[in-house]
Image (tube, rainbow, N blue to C red; front, side, top):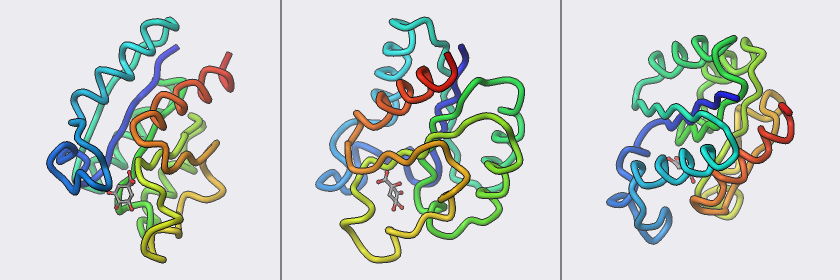
Length: 143
Ligand code: DQA
């Protein structure tokens, strides 16, 4: 099984960025944690991060047929990028949306996700554990 772990804008700043909300872990350490969890279950995890909408769209297109699932934290794109929503809808690869913080308990604009209805599941407010839980959701869905 092959999984793409994809993070959108500003998530490369984890560890530095608002640690009271997002914690002290860097993106690299979270990626290592997901890779290790995957290895324990025979799942190959490839990691990708970009701050650019078009690059993320291209990566989702590439995921079609190449990966069995995508773990995706779209960052602020969650709340307004219909182009990324359409990219998720365009591929048959199941996508699990992850948010480190509890987006429903923050500013009202964060409660809106353009990915509603096109993702397999949305996981929010579980910190870095959300990425592990997303991998397990995909394992159960795919196998
Ligand atoms: C986030 C929540 C978004 O609202 C925010 O723009 C992010 C991170 C999260 O992981 O909690 O960049 O997706």
